[in-house]
Length: 639
Image 1 (tube, rainbow, N blue to C red):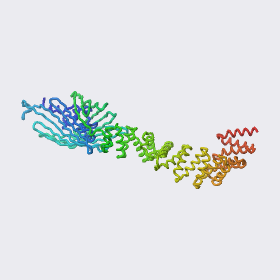
Image 2 (image 1 turned 90 degrees about the horizontal axis):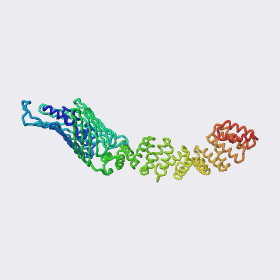
Image 3 (image 1 turned 90 degrees about the vertical axis):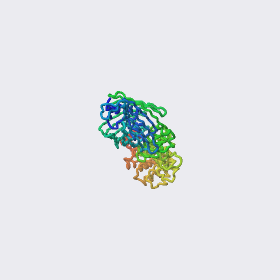
Image 4 (image 1 turned 30 degrees about the horizontal axis):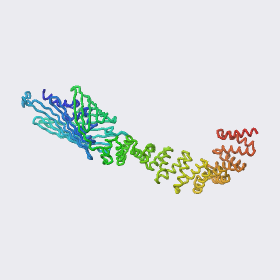
């Protein structure tokens, strides 16, 4: 076999997956680091481990969580072999380090004559070797699973043949960005995008008159975690020699110690399997190529975690963030995530708490998360989100361990802005029951009382809340409280209590615009208690002092009722007629006209009573008093 053909095989046979790079300077640096990458079609920019970090994308070095050694050796045809050894060391603060040694050897070449290449020199053979040392480092620039990692490495490439040796130097650069979606956190971020620029500084290797210059190339890759135990990756490469390559790969891990892989590109299909046991691993990959049949690769891996799992609370923030990512299922990770969120704040805190409430919803740290979301939304005046998050905290079993009175006040305030009155009252009630005297406790009493009175019309609750408020906070402005207490007692037919609270209101707040209403309701309370003389004194003050007030027609009506109660029918008739004449559009006009007919009937003026009842039936056909009017009208006609 000629030297040309054997050198051609030297470039092509290490792995059928790399056949696209045949004949290119530095092609042996594109054959792949291990059987793992072969099983995924050669995908080595994302879904990385120590071997891919040291060999493929230097940005992955900053994300390592274990010290790792790996070795791959492939025996090829015609005495050729391809070997890769990698070492990866994660860093505590300044990033990690990666080292890879790549060797492509071919022995058994027949030595030819110096002047006549057609004749071999019997018994003399030589070999050719291409070797490269890749040394680099990478650092994760974020303190959480989302962020950017940068890396770079230097290349020392050497070629040797016979007594000739040459070296060249170059450099690569890589970047990786991770985007974590809400409620989804795992060791590999769901969406990862990586870019590497190889041979930024191009190695040049000179052998006699020939100079090999490694071509620049750009690789772009993306991966997405489609399942908690697997991920899908895509990779594309454009090289300076105008060659292009596309790769797709997937790795599934049905168990923590078993990995199944599948991949391919335009020229081949690949598959692989990986097994792990106590820090030891073995990977097997196979590729089928339409020209070279099957190619096999076997790799050995030794990995040791950077530090054993420990209490995350004892770790510095930098390491605690990694601990959370690596042990996201452990409930202790929720504690660490809460501590990180408190330290970082902003968007990082939001992502951390989304992880906590999604992965550990029943823990106290999830309650902290809902409180954080609620407080932040409240500060942004996003009432809907604030209420939603704080309601979730309201239903959490650890709410009392996390929430403070200010939290529930914010729930009440946000719900009040949205018109969700019952939720608002629930928030205020929690503040009211808090021990001590927090800042918003007094305000909560008065807001809850107002909602019960104005919106829920729950007068018993109004009385309960306001009575405690006026006792606790006697120095505050209590005009609303006393007036609404009087009104609520009236609605509950507790007339003496109504009189007592309205008297306090009238004594303290004589210039308040609600004085006419207070006089009326206290006057009506006296009437209901059977004390018409006291009632008339108050009602007269309304009619004479506030004739234009909206309560004036009610006062005149009840003056008529009081006159009837004292037997002064003529005066009662005058008051009812006044209501019908002066307030025809008021809500008291129907009852005044019906009462006028009754008084006329009692006085014996049957004809006039009949006319009033007829007018009432015609003017107010749907009024509840129509049946009584018809009954009295029938009685008068029969007489």
